Structures are given as C-alpha cells and as structure tokens.
Length: 207
Image: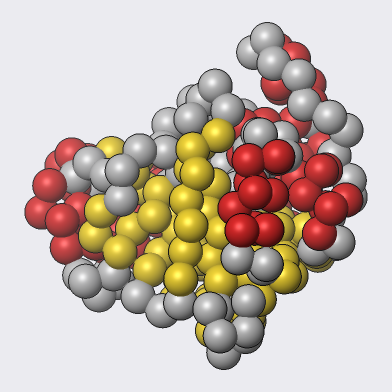
C-alpha cells in the first residue's frame, strides 16, 4: 500500500489518495476542496481512481467531489445514513459562508462491513457514528482512515445536526480495540497510532 496526503480548503481537511503501487488502482478519501491539486497528485503517478469515499458528508469533506467524479469517472461511496446530510451540504456550506458546487448523486450507499478492493489491497468499512450519523472509518493494511471520528489527541465535535456523544463514545471504544500499531490517518491534523491514542487521547477520560 502507498498513500498521498494533501491538506485542502479553508478548514484544512486531510484528503488522502490510497493506492496499490503495483497496479496503480486507487481511491480518494474526503476530497473537500481544491480539485486541481488533488488531480495533480493522482496524475503524478498515473493512478486509476476507482472510488471517491467520503468518511462523512459535511461540506468541507465533499466540495471537490463533483470535479473528481467528472475527471476520473470514479464511483462515489457514502454511508447510507449520510444521504440527508449529503443532500444538504450546499446549504450547510452557504450557512458558514462558503460555496460548493452541486453534488452528483452517490453511486453506492455503503454500510458496516462493506469491503473496498484496489489492486491486491482490501479495506473494510467500519460504521463509526457520533460526529455524523453515517460517519465511517476505512480500515486495512495497517492503517485506519478516521475522518472526523478520531483525531490525534481528540475526537470530532457532536454539536452538528445528527451528532451524538454517546454514539461517539461507542465508536471511540471500537477504534481503541484495533491493534496498537495501526496508523491513524485523521480528517484533520497530524497522523497518530491507536497505541498513542489509547495512552494520550483526552477522550479516554470521557468513557
């Protein structure tokens, strides 16, 4: 497995390009903004993008979806419980003073246990609600992409529509059960590991 990371948009979202270096098949996670820069990453290694996956669909994580879909033809994947938030993303962006283009319909609504395959790599979808009803993490090959469920030293907020602190506690516990060496690739901020978060994340005291 190989990965590329780029920080996009005014809210500094981590967009990831995950790929199999032998086959060049890839998926893009949370393309929130700046599609031209994301496409530069993709084209620099001549990658073939199969999927655009949103860990959740708040506007700062989906703004570049339309252009990436147009340029790559990749399938858009979101959790089935994110449909309402996805459809309201433009309105949410406008409320916060931002503008994003109209979003194309998702190609597939995914749920717990769904498997993603690129080349010889397999990943599993973990449904981790709390920050958002259909929040997901993408787990496999020694990494977990956590979106806004888990950050280095912190967790996602729960005061947006659909947020739920009790569900976030359950999702956090679940992530802490992963192997300690698992690398955490969050939606904002620096990378970490599950082991570090088990020892140092403030949210442990909230459980």
